[in-house]
Length: 592
Image (tube, rainbow, N blue to C red; front, side, top):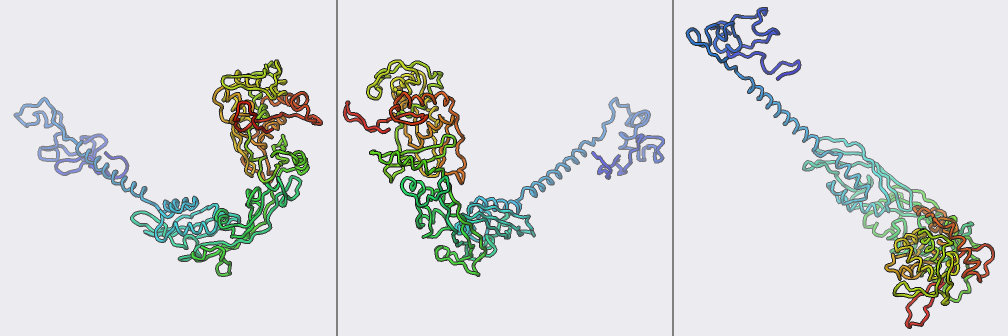
């Protein structure tokens, strides 16, 4: 089969005598063809060509194929087939196609230099030096690159590799690298990645000068630093708190000299004896407060790098000098006037106490006080919240469809099956509205309604609207409030009044009434600058508006009516028992 303008590999008309006769548009027997010859017994139209040149009487004329005297056959003579020739040609084409395809496949799939370069640069950016070494030959790439990483204190690596130049089984490619250094600015350099093909695979031929052009055998990169002025911890009005005492000192933290363990944790920018934060915000915000150190990049022997404190920058060993910057101030939300008022309020407390004041509209912590000092119980103390938790429980009842004027029964005692709940002082108030039961902090009414109308999952969900079962990320240690799903009616009732297995802190419980005041629960904030990233969005409290008058009734007509508050005050009293009673009539200790 042939198509196109090139000469056909198969003659148009092949004859047994070896002649090639071109086809004519009108057929081989066209009388108009000038080169037409009459078939004869001895000529080209003779024996063996009957199937191509037929006369009026048949293949051999009127007497039939056998010549004179032979009977004419009723079957036409069998034509010589061209199928075998055509199949052979097609088979040849198929073989050539397969051979060509195999060559193409080999060329397209054989390892390329770009494969090794891509694997090398990707591993370098990921700081995975074992994988980087896997595509190299020559020196110990993993050991050298790890030493460079640790000596410089790398935090990030960005590599840009250029197009390779290849000559036979070797080649090279240029690269540019930019590295981020801990407590310093970025630095970068250019270099060359030599290439070599081994056993069909392309590899980077590694040596120390591949990591950095200035490195020789047995050398690594290291750094020396000079710190600028450290930043300060500030109150909201800009007052320095670095030298604060008492409860504020527990927040701000203290400074000290870096130990070997500190240097290992903080990285090569630090030396033993450097000033660092060792607690509180001074430690949590060390990077911001310390700033960026002025840094000299050195080429040193690997043995010398083992003792960083002995390194000194000289004109000969300094490869680069990076400018530093002074530390940044850290501004807190502490309002010193509110702080003083809070301290005055509990300073003479006979029992250990913790107080936290929160701005409802922002969640900012305005004050925090601990009496006595030595332990930040305001943030880290673990306490059952007691009746102050009823804000959350009544929110769950409102979620169930109750209204604040719904009638509740407040008997002296209520037993849901296995445990008798009573009210403070053995009181019983009989029939009350929801607002009245909340104001008098009636335990029995709330427990009965929660067991009847709510569920363990519903009460847990309500507690999580107010920040429970989630960490409080404020920059210093703080307790994560916990509300385990209660099992059974008794535990459900106990946790509805802030007992059972609930654990909270003064910090967390300060956010609960703040959520009612604002309408949304807000994660507490201690540091306002720099802004802490990734804090949860405010959680709307659907029934905050309904609960506010109930909290006002606590102060005007309820359990806090004798507190002597001035102005329009809203609140919820709460007392929680703790410990284990040794006798049936023994009263448990409690905290409020």
